[in-house]
Length: 281
Image (cartoon, rainbow, N blue to C red):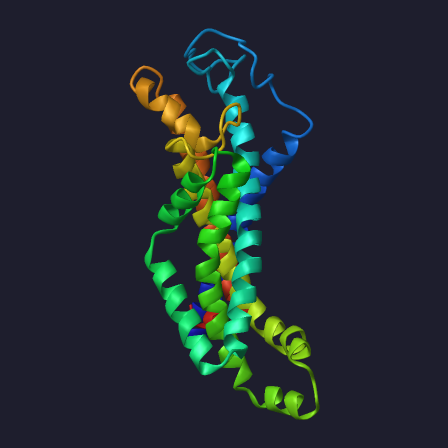
């Protein structure tokens, strides 16, 4: 009986992974497609204002007469660019700070840990808003940098905890005794052992970055026009939500599907990286 239950749980874990890959892969395919083909020119007024969905315009048109499906497709590209770039920046800063804290003296480690705890206490979106507000103008690059800085504190805290745990292992003591430099210990022992957990966290941070970018764009602090961010599309649709509901429904579904897909993918990766969890689920 237990074997049957374990098999069913493994199947459910595999289904989670494949469903996540399907949703994320769909958005990746759409984003790549926008590089070579779009149904219409993003700035062309190809139809009447707020036209309903039709064969010519699958998702209708926006308040200016532009093809709305084209805007949604471009939104996938922007979301992926923001998510990947923000996670890359946050990961680079966070992993560096976390590893340095793990190797630092007790006093410096406590100071860095307290600073990270204070930063984590503030919502990611609030930190990103402060960074964007401190810049001269809102842009896609500014939003990415702001989100990367905001996410770095979470990554740094997790890296510090994982790295300190690895540094207590016997093989680390043996490496130090043999004369291995601290850089060698980091790249040969610390990073390879903490990478599975970090990769899952990066996937979760990706979803957080996508939602935060949509929120910034909704508030007018994200990618400016003509960048068709899903958050900006939602902001533009709020005045016509009753007369043209597709303008609010379509970008909302796109945003939710990408975030759910990334979270399902992260859950599947967690099962692969942790055999005990994979069996116990």
